[in-house]
Length: 354
Ligand SMILES: [Zn+2]
Image 1 (cartoon, helix red, strand yellow):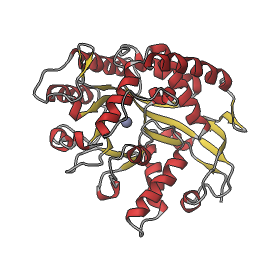
Image 2 (spheres, helix red, strand yellow):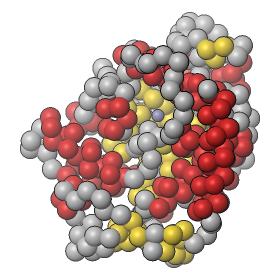
Image 3 (cartoon, rainbow, N blue to C red):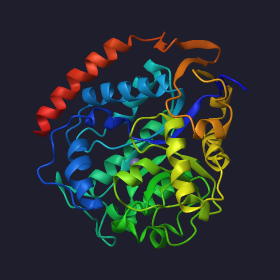
Image 4 (cartoon, protein in one colour):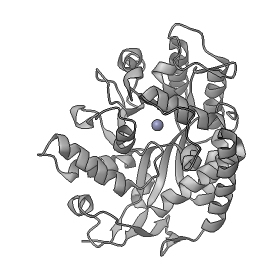
């Protein structure tokens, strides 16, 4: 019985999406996974500049910390503000005090400033993909902590996928990539089979049709929200981690949802399965296992208690012995300032989108 856990790890986040809340409705109502991407997320990421990105990342990181999440694996895209974007996210996370592992999502879906929803596998690498690769390389070679990001196989040519895999191998990191999230990416398994290594992060893997090397990141809330079906990670032997895919970073909340979704399909499952997914986050951030988080509930170290107790809140966070959240309030930065700046940035961003 304890009020304490270690720091939580969000193994797949999009800090650029923090300001999406309240954005203007898309021009037409999305009717499929691809149209959600085209009408919501690919419009949002195209409207980002580096200043907006900073406050979006700062807000997302601050909300993560206040949810007891001390480490974030982020996947970023901002096609009109690629160069330096990973430094901007890193500095926002550093300001907040959250550990980060960053990558830029390389894609060929942008050509000459125009979107072409799916890339031709046999086509040549786009200038935008080259810039994305350079941003990953620049950030990692300068000592940034991260991976080489790729959006998804279905928006990349084979040439781009190979270049990303080679860059990652040369830098001794993995590739952080969305895999078979929806029907448009159902060929991901075939296209990535010869490239993936055990360092790769395979995000979603909902419709994956074969075993790939790497770690699977399960994002149950996002998968439900996008109506892509249930990719039960238990069916794979791969290590599984838990992410939010940009819908906040409250990992106990995500774990509760992951558990009930798992249980819906298999009544013999226990919350320990999901608890292990949370713990596997320490494979990426071992030091987060030494962070301390205090919660307003006295059996938070029990997977069964967490699974059946909605609304458990983080009250205090200690990172490297530093008391960085005290009675629900951050001590290292001014949360009201972050909210105010994020709100101004959101207003600018939403105006651009309207
Ligand atoms: Zn994602």
